[in-house]
Length: 162
Ligand code: FEO
Image 1 (cartoon, rainbow, N blue to C red):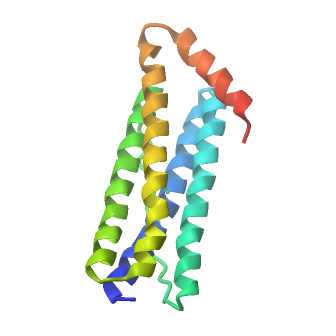
Image 2 (image 1 turned 90 degrees about the horizontal axis):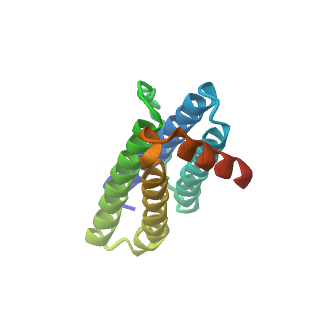
């Protein structure tokens, strides 16, 4: 594996851990305002991010590649309302998608077919992740007009389980 691709994949492990950290923080935000359904939903997202980090870690180990550990940044948590939280979650996923595309581009340029094949799973996953947050954001758009909307969604998410 080219050094550049090793570095990109190690950086992506860090991004995935940061994503988990961010979504745990968002879960905390929702818990603190007693929106338990949303809190549960964000915790579930956080756990998914941990599994993404592990997937990349396993791939590097499989290819006998070096793992490097980097500092995980603290997320900004100054969200003003639930809409703001979901705006930030979507923006973050769009950033992650751009990083995944960078890996795909580098793998293509290096003729690294193993990485190219591996990263395809993440390209599909990013489509789903962006779609999930976009839909949830749309759903709570009416929040400013009627808090009953957000309460109904909260109950729905609460039923989904962890
Ligand atoms: Fe692992 Fe939400 O991207």
